[in-house]
Amino acid sequence: MRYYILKITTRGIKNIEKDISLHFYPQTISKTLNIRKKNVKAIFGMNGSGKSAIIKSVELYRYLTTVKNYLTSTQKKYFDDLINKKTKSFYFNVIYAVYDEKNRNKIINIYSHSILVKYEDGFYKIIEERFSKLSKDSKTINGKYDLIFESKNGNLLTIEGYLGNYITNKTVNLLHDSSFFAIMKYYIKEFNGMLLEYQITPVETLYMKDLLYGGMMSLSLNIYLDIDDIYDAQSTYAYQFFEVFENLRDEKSNIDENIKINVNINVVKKENEKLYEDEIKNLERFIKIFKPNLKEITFIKKVNWDYFIYSLIFNYDGYSVDLELESTGIKKLVRLYPYLQYASKGEITFIDEMDANIHDVYLSKLIEFFEKYALGQLCFTSHNLGTMKELNYNDYSIDFINENIEIVSWKKNGNYSPYNRYRSGLIKGSPFNVNDFDYLSVFDVGEKDADNNRGRA
Picture 1 (cartoon, one colour):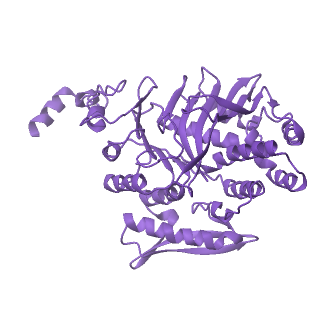
Picture 2 (cartoon, helix red, strand yellow):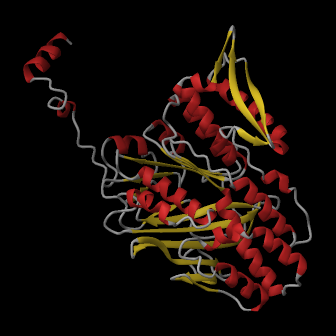
Picture 3 (tube, rainbow, N blue to C red):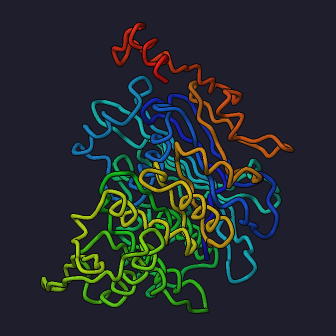
């Protein structure tokens, strides 16, 4: 079972005042999901256009749906800095498919989840949250959706029966500060015990499966911003969610596959020792592609109660370097590696400024790999226009965010090249009206000096 994002709509982060939407797949839905030539999306735009704001909105959605009581007073300054100053609100909607990768990518269900946060009475609150499922007779993602749950102003609307009463009691007075799914993750062990202890009805079983599909989706999201991300609760939650899911169906799956290892988080549970060290070997193979003179990545491992603390050492011919002393480019690759690995193995990864510190040739080949072989979904922002050439002939793979904060999607069109049209200012709202002499006054070069330099050239 995997997840694939079909469409995202968001507003309210930084300079994004109005709704913008990213489309990742055709609106018409068939019985199976074909991700090839659609699973990689690059977002381009001028400096300050809002590229990072899009990735940040996905990250904020993930935090809202995974961290209980995320909207507390301790987060107020963070939201003050992040949320658009005019709207004082944040909206995020994601439409996604749940599909069975072991059954020819058969689509199980299409879901829509939205969340609205507003600033009221001195606090940021979840004003509305809605989770629904595409009706069986709908053929497009714009069709009719059947409501699964909805919360408004802190009150939950849900089904009746034992399960409904149980969920309502667990969410009372919490839905202003927490997403429903964040609360659900917090009580997931109790959910498991409740399922084992009580005989729930077939209708409640289907309802519970829908909730689990919704809760696990955000656990498949991985967001890389060019800052340290120490968020590590996902693997534990994923394991527990799959335990509950197994109690709702007959067949068993290997839930250990859902434990996520991040080589950048060097404090590791002893039970995950082998998984972590295997991942270091994979990291070594990855870095050797970019730096062939690397001999080996070794580590120093210290014991701290139930954890190991790792320090990575990069070994070359005749000398060794601690990771902390490595070049900026190598450290960037190490930080990127687990997020790329997640997408390769079937999850969803968003990366801000993926091109930073990566050579154009290597980056293009990396994108080509994800197009051809990756099992998951990759979306990234970039200033490097070379990646356009790799994605030129795909639909849903190139988006531009222009100076009007609008999304302009590239559709393949004969011999037209997005690279050439973008550089020539022919993409709507991206004129690039700049010349070399515009910098003369900025860098304090007089006209006489400039003329002399032209003469020497």
